[in-house]
Length: 236
Image (cartoon, rainbow, N blue to C red; front, side, top):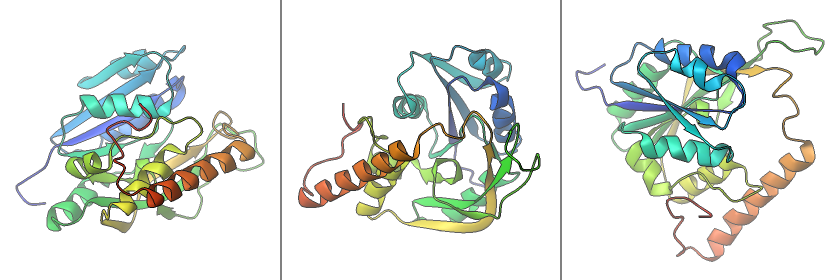
């Protein structure tokens, strides 16, 4: 890397995720990248999530009432100070060198807004008929945990939507595309998504389809009314 190292803020939202949260935090702190700011936002958990996060030195832990993933993410973003933003779900983990690889790409191309990378899924603590630790074939990761974005670029798009029934990241990414943000996909695997009993079926296929439909409908509405601003927190 060049001598200049932009500051990175990482936001981990958690709701009753104490089981895997420590591993998620550890995968961020193991990046060996500085300057790094790690913010864990506890969305009103009833387990020991906040206590797990507090065991790690230098991690900012924010406790909030249970309000859902979008408001939780937005709360962390509003407290962050980094020039670059990244995210990780509390039951997933980054691969070694994730941040450095993505930071290099952003610093080498000032016109680039976002860098993504590949993701692979692995099975842990699942009762399904597959082997523990089984890995999937890597796929392009268009999602929060695979993304590193310039803060000023994120602010152009605005916060994650708090409208009920929306797919938070898909809606945000659709707005980013509409605004012409430039992105690049790395061939490297940058994070691993854990498949386990607690996240399988968290959202029913019907609700998932409805969320996709609502996201598409909102995007079409913006095309009909392009002058409407997205706002800092959609749906406020």
